[in-house]
Image (cartoon, rainbow, N blue to C red; front, side, top):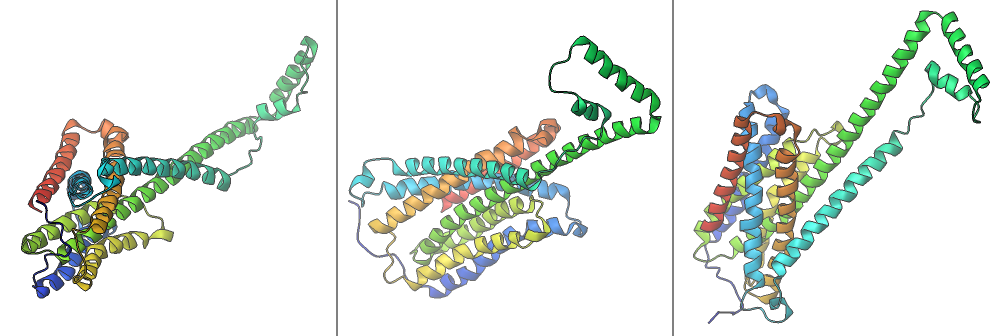
Length: 358
């Protein structure tokens, strides 16, 4: 028979629990900050292969976190025997996760469309006619030509061409090339704008999803019983690896100078999330009950939302854009692609094992 009594398994050991606040804070910050610092200080001589390994290892960590550390516990919480009512009549963990996936899809879709419209408004450049053909076509009447009119117009164009020196002719070609170059430049700027906004949205959402999860595991650690020591060690590695995953994604973005502090704000927000959860848990330990209906539902709902966010981010942003829709990966040697997939599998495998130990 399931024990549904209210309370927690806190059994003292306040000193180690307080130390976990600072140890996990340090591990989380170090894992997330290191890739960003190394990327901004290339003079330190950090080898490129290390960035490569960290990037794809982090992708695996995020995917394993979504399925093993979030969706699994959410399903357990929302199917706990202590729950009663409508919450027990539907697989809410999977349902909420699915709704979160669709919500993230809509957010990214709107963001991309907004980026395109915003760029079009900011770069509304008036085109002027510099080529001879454009000027002559503007001078033509709008009504249809008959044969004689067409002959007269063409004769005038040929005469002008013969009388004009070669310089303007080449100037026309040059202006045409300039317009083509300007069009390519605008297309590149549009792509960069969309790419930056997409990356910023993806990273902000990724950080948001992981922070929710981190706060709740901090609460759990604060009131854990006999398993506290094991959970403490596991969470140090867990948060460090997650921080590495977040940091490599933040480091991969080409941040404009106007937003140069944004990466550090994202890192700090992640780093303090679990320590904040531990501190809150220690503060409310006399009344906090991980097995109560309210806590189970809250944990289950937020873990399901976070799982949906990370599943979308992992499959679309990380696996999809890094492999399936990446020109670089499509043209890369098979050895490089295999190494990237291997690093991702290694990250997912280690994170899955940490979930098993926890």
